View 1 (cartoon, rainbow, N blue to C red):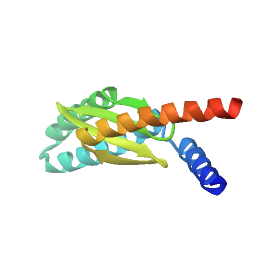
View 2: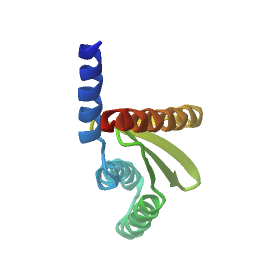
View 3: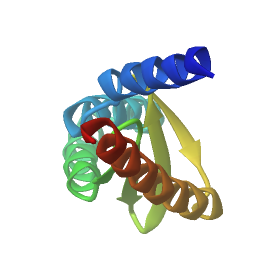
View 4: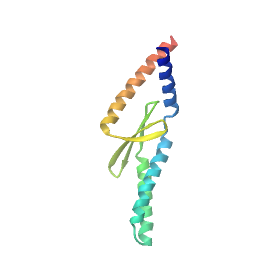
Length: 128
């Protein structure tokens, strides 16, 4: 029982230490948007259309980064981004990001609340 508890505590500490920040997600998301922009620019013909396209795409990137919302659950984070009306959800854990669906996000949010309650109980038990 003690070994299991120690493993759970160590895993929780590792997950807490590797929970990605808002800045890390924005860097990840920014690089993803840049790849999409590169593909769009390759489709453009002519010098002026490329400049115009480049300006529009930079505006899209800034707009996309401004829509990012983070929900921090200590051992993982949920990120919501809205790009041109399309909502995209990610989970950040162990310094990695994965796309998730809305229904999964709701379940993870509920699980995160449960984890917070359990951590609070564990903290109270350790203090007593």
